[in-house]
Structure formats: structure tokens, C-alpha cells
Image (cartoon, rainbow, N blue to C red; front, side):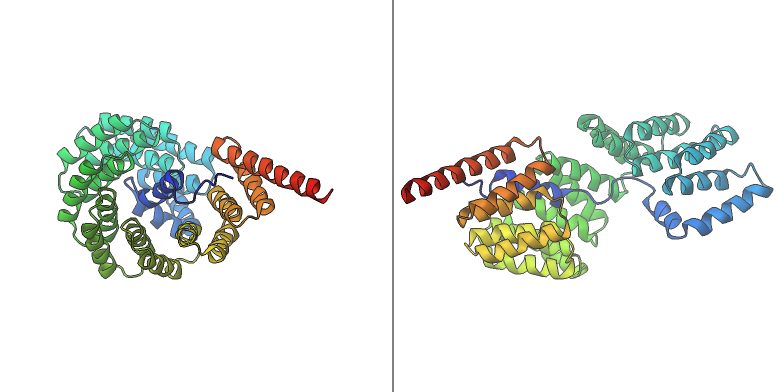
Length: 354
């Protein structure tokens, strides 16, 4: 059987999508977190205000926000409509509503409300950055970058705009441009360990491994418990040929974040490269125990079982992966190939016994 190796381009891209994914990309995250921490208490507080002051715009908007985040979207919409009636020219009303729709991954509505906010406040950089984030989520990369560029021109001192722009370039393989924006972001905040990790990933993609190591080392010195710094450090060590050091970094990342199934998969893939198959199988099974919907784990486990000659177990893994992702033709091909080979071996054994 032609094994679909666990360290080939398919797996590397899937893993890299996880590694490079921006952890935040919009504008009012702190506000949302503040509301969620005391959700019911806050709702009661704002509702009492509205009993005596029904036109209080802050209480109206915040009540809608809380209801929205609690999943009561129809009730929330009533408060949003009321807020727009009370203060039709207050751009912050639309900005708050847009942020909530972004949180719920309803990007078209996010864009609608942000554009309404933009008509009321044409020089607010957060609105342009929000549009950049939402447009990127629906695949409009060039338009997204134009809005981030506008945000940067309006406020060249806000680090987040450079980081999000760099993230877009990194995810779209424009590594030199990503490098420029990450460097600018670090100039504005040289203690931002997450951006340092992203900068390290970019150097890694450019095979400038020593510079990548420096970034990871600095990130770890700032935030030693940030597991992704150790994970990315390990991946770059692996790319540079230092497999044993990579494994140590992965194990440290797992120690810091034992529920991250993707780190187990990356560690297992590396163990397969070293032909330490039993330990790799253990790690794949750990990943599946954490998240039994992870297609990648089943495929990689199936590949490893095939290497060991356990075609029956391999078929079971591919079957599960194909059920989880029935449109992935690579998985279907593996499944069919494993069945065909298993049938061929079984027929051969029967013939030999006869």
C-alpha cells in the first residue's frame, strides 16, 4: 500500500492552518468578556435602569448585547432596533451590534452594520479594521487588506492592525510582507509574545531558522506557560532537522496544555518519522480521546497502522475519517486502497491454505 505519509504536504498544511490561525481579530473583545463574566447580574442591572429610564442608550445596547450572547437573538434584535430609534446617529450602537454578529460568525450582517457605522463616523479606524476582519472571513482578501490599510493610515500607532494584516499575509503565503508587518507590530509592543511567535513562524517558513529560534526564545522568556510558543518552536526544530529537540518542545507544550489534541498529533507525526510507531499510536489515540471528531487523527492513525501492517485497524480508522469528512477524496482513496489490499491479502491466504 502506498502510504499517505503523516509528514507530507497535506498534513503540514492542515497543521499550519491551526498554528497560524489568529487568536483575535476584531475590536471589542474586552467588552464582550466583561459582559459574559457577569451575564445574569449585568442583565438584571441594565433592565432595572430601563424601568426608570427607557431611553438610556447604554442600557438598551448592553441589554441587547447580553441577550444576544445568551442566545436570545430575537429579543436582542428588539433592543437593537430600540437603540437605533433612540440614537440613530450614534455610530457606537452599530459598532456594538456589528461586533456581536462577528462573534456569532454572521459576517454579512457584521459588514452591514459596520458600513452603517462608517457613514456616521468616517474617520474611525476601528470600523475599518472591523470591516477588514469580517471581509477576510468571507474570503475577500484584497478588500480586507484595503480596509486594514485605511485603519493603519488613520491610526498608525495601533499594534493590532499590523498584527492582523500580517496574519492575513502569513495565511496566504506572502511571507516577506507578513514579516514587515509583524516587525512593525513588535516595534509598537516588544512584549507581545503571541506576535513574536507569529514572527518566528514566518521566519520558519522562510527557512531562517536561527531568527525563528530567537523569536520563540524571547516569547517563552516573556510567557513561559504559553504552550503555542513551545509547539511552534518544536515545529521549527523539526523543519531544521533537530527531531529530538522538536519532540522535547512538543512534550513541554503538552505539559502546559494537555487537552490540545493537535499537539498530540504533531508529536505523533514526528515519532512516526523516527519509526517509534507504538508511541505514535499512543499519541494519536490520546488526540482521539480528547476530540473524537478530529479527522486528521484518524487518518494519521490509519496510516501508522498501515505501516505496521495492521490493515484491518487501518481500514477502521479510514472508515471513521471518511464518515467525519465524506467529501475528502484523499481519505476516500486511502480507504478504498486499504480495503483493496486487505481483500487481496485475504484471498491470497485462502488460496495458499487450499
